[in-house]
Image 1 (cartoon, rainbow, N blue to C red):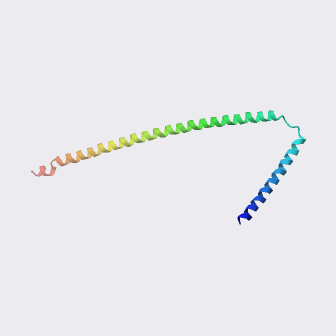
Image 2: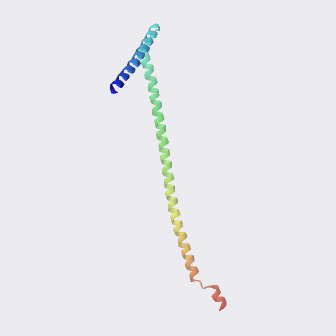
Length: 119
């Protein structure tokens, strides 16, 4: 089975390569009819285009880095505010429980009004 599979892959590769060679031959024949541009000029144009694309990529990278930094800063501010609110909430709950306890203790220490009225 492996041998048959290998032969099929080789046949497919030969077919692909023959089509590639045929297209390259047609391309080269088509170019012979045209007047070719100087190779150096084409190469320089390609270099300039590639450099401009690289510069744009770097600029986009900088913009993305700044956006990430802004997002991180905003995240840390939100985290800090959340921690502050949680601490404040905890302290307020403690104060509330202390208030409730003192009110309950105060009620227990007061004499009942019913006992005073009957006396």
